[in-house]
Image 1 (cartoon, rainbow, N blue to C red):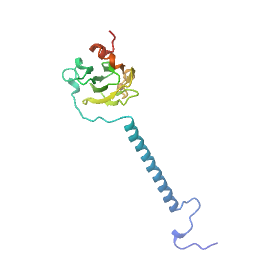
Image 2: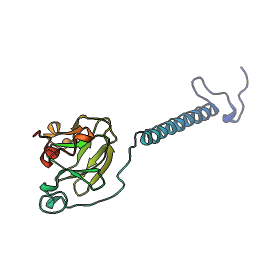
Image 3: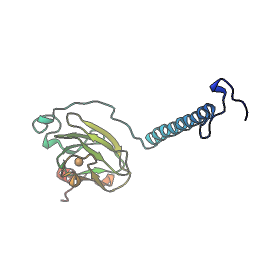
Image 4: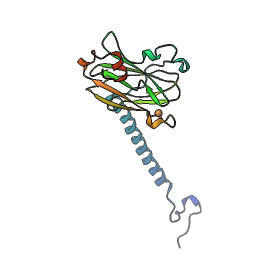
Length: 196
Ligand SMILES: [Cu+2]
C-alpha cells in the first residue's frame, strides 16, 4: 500500500468527493450562463418595449378619488370621447367596481387618441388588445396612455387587475370608426357607442 502524505490536504480525495478546482470551474460556468440569460432577458424587455412603443406613465398626476363625481375633469358630463382643437381625441374613463364609466367609447381610426383614466375605489387595469395600451388604474392617480388605432373595429377591453368578486365581468369596449365618419357622431354616440 502506497504511503499517505502527512499533510491531509495533499492526500488523494475519497471516492465521491469533487475536487475544489472542479467545483470552482463549474460555478464559474454557471455564473456566466446566468449572466448571459439575464442579458438576454433585459434585451427582450428593452427591444419589445421600444418595438411595441410600450412606456411607463410619463407623468405623475394626482386626483382626489372621493370627489371625482363632484369636481374636476372626471365629472360625469366630461367623461367619454372629447375632440381637441388639433383634431386629436381625448377619452376620459373612470374605472370602478365593477365597470368602466362609460362602458363603451367611440374613437376615430388613424388619429392620435389620449386615454385618461382614474379609479374611484381600488386598483383596476386597462388594456386594449393589439395596441400599446396597457396600464394600471390606481385610485388617487390619473393614468394617461397615448395611442392610435390602425383601422375600424371593436376592441374588447378587460380589467386585468383582480379588483374583487365582480372582476371577471368588468369589461368595456372601444369602438373604432373610420376617420371620415367620426365627425358626424353626436356626443351621445361617442360616449355610449349608441347608434342614432
Ligand atoms: Cu378588475
